[in-house]
Image (cartoon, rainbow, N blue to C red; front, side):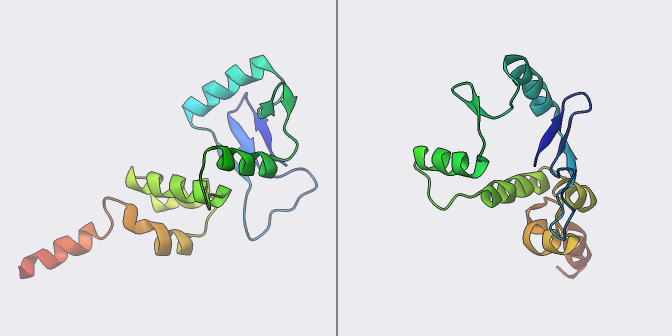
Length: 132
């Protein structure tokens, strides 16, 4: 269950009956651009995601259809998350912020994504520079 709080600009990924699991979801603060777009969409209807004026009940089915229409293969919601995390590190997001924002363990971020940071191993390279 996903709910959007347009007043605070927060997206909640857990319904009242759901428990937060090891695969944390929780909530995120919307980027300002998305928040503004969501407010505009809300004025046009009661659902954020709709098609022909009707709410989309199965976002997974709609996602697969969009991927197919775009002519893409092997694209999943996780692909989008991977891209977002990669871009975040490329633009200087800290490990601490990424852990909270993407609800991903520090270990996973360090092992999979940290190398995309422009400052990754910068300190180590500087220390080794004295040898060259």
